[in-house]
Length: 444
Image (cartoon, rainbow, N blue to C red; front, top):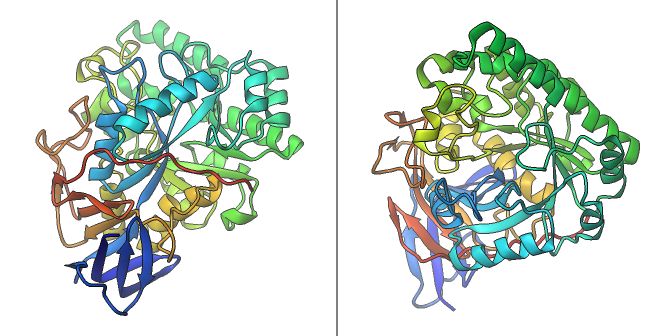
């Protein structure tokens, strides 16, 4: 087997930063620390650079099948590895939606051929696929995605009996999008009455209100407590919702919470310059909400940081409020964003690694990934904290070919991404064909 020595890197892992060597043999970390180097080993000196476990993004929308004008598994997984994300969990609101075993098998077949990063897929819930949910196994899906508001197609789950049954019977973690649809529809009607079709983008935070988020999140948490379900509430966007969740290590929790990088970065002042480019569901809200989310990450109330990467074409995003779709592309710049916040004193490197690698692996039971440990798969990212990354049309890898960060220079750079022991990305160049593997999810 081939071997690679990453020498003198500052390894960020399990609450520590230490300068050490990493010996990789085949696709595994063979040794952490000094020792004999096998003949023929390639040696890469990482003096002055930091080594992190490859990021695991637990919420992406790579759009395939059916919406390939916006994105494909190939294009977005390529963007992911260019940004240090080595594994992703993809959402089911495709066309057709992924709501049964056949849908999961079809997506896995595409990913096996074309994915540059490791992959897992959610099974989507509907009001009528309880039998599929009850039969699904960890060999088939990472979790059950329940749209409790803001759905596409027939994926809004609003039947009370169905929700009770999902929370009572789901054999996998339940991941929820929580917004109350009736409250949103009422707010949309008020906005139309006031503005007609020309609703200002800044009204999005009022239409997709804090009240709508809290009502739905409280319902999900109540259902989970009643049925002792394993619940993961995605993309919290308000400070008020945080009272529904507990602080502490993720291993002790049945109910966990996620924040997304855009809710930790932007607030509603950003609509003036970026408009629909930061229109997303749930909406980016006030500075106080952003501050509350940041504090919750640091106090271990929020367990995971992800992207909710959701690309749309630039033309779609140029439309008026009601016609412009919600979602923005972020997976390539997630780590850059968080490292800027490290430079600003907002998050430590150890916290970033815990929330983007360790905890997603713990939450979903991802085998052999998420940590820098001997015997684990060598999925790693090397970053230069003294470097820089300017986002421009040449740098963007998304199929939609735009980013809300165009023209922005981040204060760090992703130097290298290793996938399964091989260098998949190095200093701006993709150096390997698609080599993503299906993730293995172990039982609790």
